[in-house]
Image 1 (cartoon, one colour):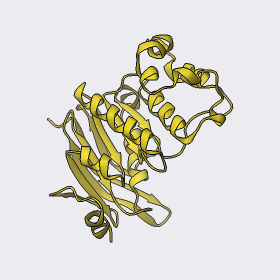
Image 2 (spheres, one colour; image 1 turned 180 degrees about the vertical axis):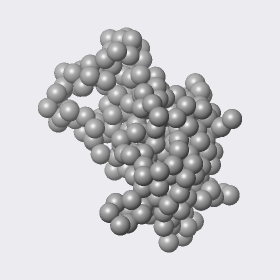
Image 3 (cartoon, rainbow, N blue to C red; image 1 turned 90 degrees about the vertical axis):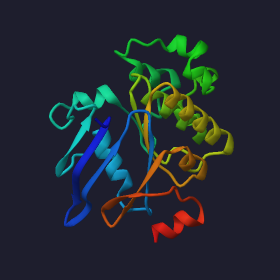
Image 4 (cartoon, rainbow, N blue to C red; image 1 turned 135 degrees about the horizontal axis):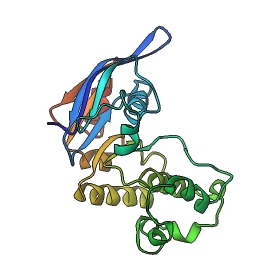
Length: 226
């Protein structure tokens, strides 16, 4: 059985059908990329997979469980890093973490000392308001918040977009570690380094998702997007 099964997902905005019966699968421990031109519906698809958007029809199974029948399944399996900033800008780094760590059983202090917060360099910014953080630090914090409940699936929308080289490398390094520990990743990206991490790639074009037999990057990917 595939760890993730997506069957015939449809989604429209008004009369425009964005997702036209999208289907694909992901095996446990895989990293799968969803590629496509800007505005093709990639973020919409990720929102449906993460439970922040409602599909018009179709089915998703996470390890055989249907989140459309029980929305707690989303919380059980999925950590979601959207492209836009999901943080509370007026609150400090620590207060944002308190919100996401609530009821997870994990210790912020432990993670500050020798966990992911230390690994991502956020321990030095605990008192900073989020509004004062750089784009790279905000992205790091967004990832940590998505991982607070130890999800088995990490869904990421353009994680490296508009970030400096150091932050991109930190994200890449963590994704490798996350997968080594059994995590499963679905991401959208135009970053060559991120796409090369993926086992398989799907192309979303005109509302139709199709699997690519290779993993094109650079000019080859741009040609496929046309």
